[in-house]
Length: 217
Image (cartoon, rainbow, N blue to C red; front, side, top):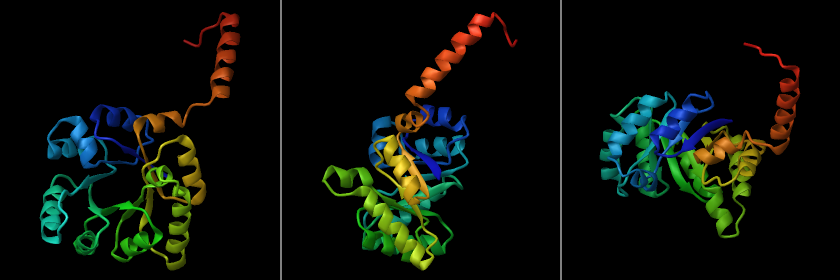
């Protein structure tokens, strides 16, 4: 499974990039707004930090303007992935951009039918929002299962990018189901390494080592 981090905080991206665990970055208008910085400037800086795919979202909703914005964003760096809304105009743009050789991430997916359409349009990534489905008492993980089955049935190359992930268990379950990518907030990615028994065991090992009075250095 690939790990993308869902943030526009360049300091956090640098920290995670240094671990070697980061495969890419996803952003959206809300995350950019939180940064208080210029949108294109932030995307350019993120693309310089990581060689992985960096999703930059268009703001337009009509096909012609989506395409104009996509070309502007795509010119920022070679690893920009154009993030598109899951609408008919968004899918039309997805098809056109794919034919141009541009990677795409079709976002705000909430049904298997939507995911099927995105794959047929040639999307590089489909972003099902599992946390937001859980918020309305639907089953976000079941959506991942359905998309996995459909994509496998027909050999679609579109990668399932599980989004709106809230907990480490979401990550684990998505990996078991077979999602290709999990995009997570920095805090959630860092939480994956934590386990109380790991902490307890390390504490005991260090205490025993201290008793020896030795030093490796």
